[in-house]
Image (cartoon, rainbow over all chains, first blue to last red):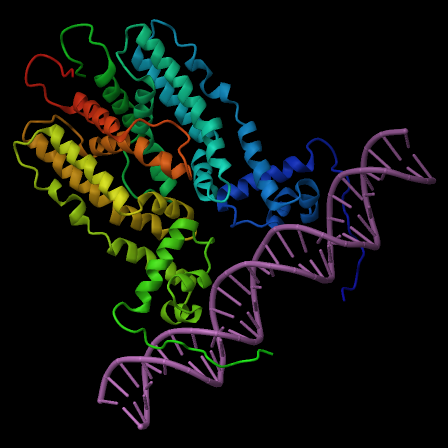
Amino acid sequence: MKASTVSSARRARRPSGKSSADAILIGAKRLFLAEGYDGVNLERIAEAAGVSRQTVYNQFGSKEAVFRSMIEFHWASINRDDIFSNLHKARVLENPKAILNRFADAIFRFVSDTDQIAFTRLVISESRRLPWIGQEFYRLGKQPLLRAFVVCIEKMIEDRQLSCQNPELAAHQFLGLIQEFIIWPRVMAIGPAILEIPPDKVVIEEAIRMFLGRYRVDRDITPFRP
Amino acid sequence: MKASTVSSARRARRPSGKSSADAILIGAKRLFLAEGYDGVNLERIAEAAGVSRQTVYNQFGSKEAVFRSMIEFHWASINRDDIFSNLHKARVLENPKAILNRFADAIFRFVSDTDQIAFTRLVISESRRLPWIGQEFYRLGKQPLLRAFVVCIEKMIEDRQLSCQNPELAAHQFLGLIQEFIIWPRVMAIGPAILEIPPDKVVIEEAIRMFLGRYRVDRDITPFRP
DNA sequence: CTCAATTTATACTTTACAGTACAGTCTAAT
DNA sequence: ATTAGACTGTACTGTAAAGTATAAATTGAG
């Protein structure tokens, strides 16, 4: 019943540079992170990519395939080395406090550079439908961060700067001390924070203080007291 | 086209005892917690409650209304006093270690007695659609627990058992030290854990040790060392 | 017993979206 | 210039689920 079957196919073979697949994934990532799997349909993803819905099907075959590719795309686009490579380069004689500070800094960069808050929400929401996404989240996200930190701790133990039986546990403890303030309040609450959280600087400072209060080796008789 | 329009309405006016509304909420809670908002339709909720779908509409009007009522029902069914009333009764001379242990215990009971893992997942998943549920979760769940704990800490400070400038921060720190192991791994991963977490006993013991290492007042010259 | 409230079964409307089909059109490579 | 392949617009199917309407049936209360 439509008057004109004319004027279709304004573009064929994407002009140049990026493939349409990339454009789709970029749009899909933004939309999925912002509104969740069920909150977005392929129409909108196509629109966001400046592409027809049919093209999305041509390239990926199904919505779930788009989602899966988007996750891979997300992890691939993170240059982990940039974020915490220098953790490994910790000089032997460096201050434990400085090392911990650097790790905390790596966490911050990781969180802000990689949409971790929205991504965490997505993982939790969809891990029932797609069990692998929780595992990938750990394998590609948290695990490398943790591993790097454990290595740091072990180095400090070797250097007799720290006394610690279980470096893995200690690493988790430090993480917990920070995430409780930085990550979870934001994951739980959309929009403005519900609770008053102290400024990041204080959180980190206090986490380090507590951590060292437990694991620092006392080089003299007086206990660690700031 | 159906042969018989006979034999309908097997029951009218629920026999006795609980109203059908309660049965619906109980079923809804189980299903929503297990499969999320979108994962369940009212047909199944009605079925789980042994009630017709129409009755669900008669009683609640819409799916979202069922969900909202289910959340209220959940919080109403938690007897907070049972879980951590004795925190307030901490005897003046009691050991800080014992008090912390009791708080950790309260967390455990809270988590296991109230489906907190599944519920947390639900809150995170649906707080975009329903922003109030995140706030309610904090107001009715975490906040009371935290408040009670802060009071404990302040009491210990008065008794000169602890030295602490910011009891609220300290409470969060202790929480973080425990939740990192007990809550979040389970929230992130459906099914078997991905990472090896130490047994709860160890986690709590180490959290207390670290907490006291930072905030315990030293009554003699020797530093706290187990 | 009778009545009114309540419940049920069934059938219907509406909406939303995944996925498919296809014909027409543009561009790049040969 | 021709052609192959990528892309588009449009229209279609199928399905799932929310929500509505209604007549029949049941039961408790008076």
